[in-house]
Image 1: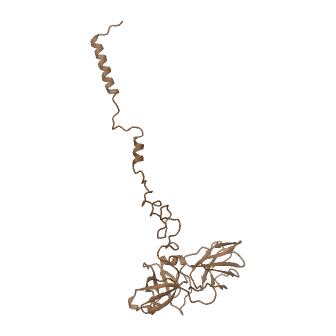
Image 2: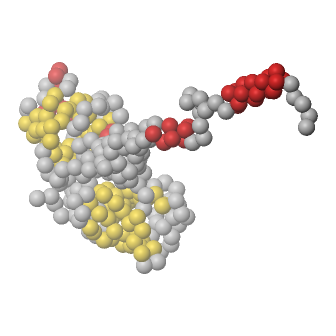
Image 3: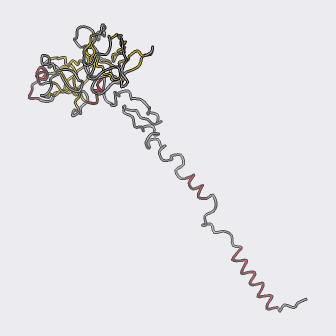
Length: 302
């Protein structure tokens, strides 16, 4: 047996002990352990991840959304939806024809503008013989759905019925009607400039059937059609295509435009008023820039 000196044995044992004390220490509690970071991320913000909180973000909160109605949106919150809200029109909110029965009074304000002559956004002809006309606040113009509707206004001097022929982009008060000067003078002193009133939609005092104006450039390949001379505001226009009623898109300038045209020959139409009443007409065909009379008319409002 090989002889190991005592002092060398003690030195070797001491070295081994020192080596063990360095290598065999338990792990430091502050050192990151596998899975610790994952746990921390799972606990941080649990229950309210970004974009999903009750009032949060773009599309999932209970009050969130990007739609146009009063409570509408494209999100999935409790008050959100994919369609217009209850007070919404074509691309707008506010107090509109759809939010109250036709014929119901509402608060409003009247002003006047010198250019009023019967023309405007609605695309009607000038009516110098009848200047009881008005422009309506843009949010209640509803993409031209208000065009041709009649409003009965109660002012300080009395009551007057006017026809909507234009939109008023500068008006900001709900129920704002911008009248011709002569119409305003029948309701209030011109010096007042701006007057609080009450008004409602009423039957237009027209005679005869509905009339239809074909827009310039209309043909079997592209057709623009405007409905005129109606008792009540128009909700939609449809044409009969291969046995199916097809809605014609409405434009902001008060024409229903079919980009691919309405074809040749007889033109069966279905016209719906805002209160849901429907009339059917058949036109002889597409007549560029012409006004054609139908044979039907809506019933008057009660």
